[in-house]
Length: 131
View 1 (cartoon, rainbow, N blue to C red):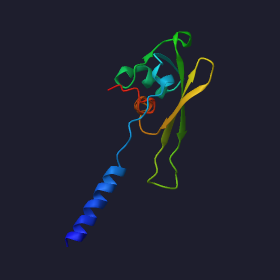
View 2: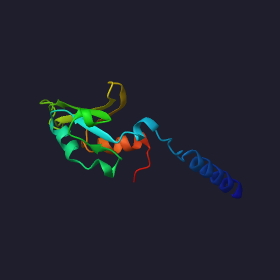
View 3: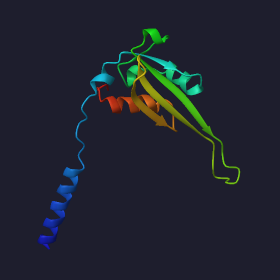
View 4: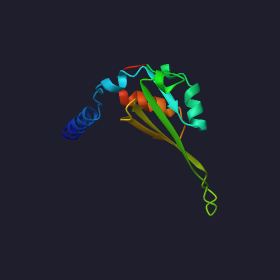
């Protein structure tokens, strides 16, 4: 009986040790972005402009691309509900690309839940240690 208990304990310790996440290394390019201009003419871009990004990042949203360190391009793709399936519903996918002033893509994100999830996803990708 104690042999089985010992084997179970060793397996439990091995699984818990393997499941620990290593801390992410901060991305210096993403962490150095202080100002961002949100580009897009849709409801998701509007929500992202109104959101206080300082909760998730160190970035501040500015009103012109010239003032910004980076540009966040926001686009929406709407998929209507399937008329043949009563359980389906319309979905909106929000895609964002963070680009520097030269147009080089620094980060890409996509969500179907809430546009504000983009800010949280950016925080996780950058790993800058904000809140």
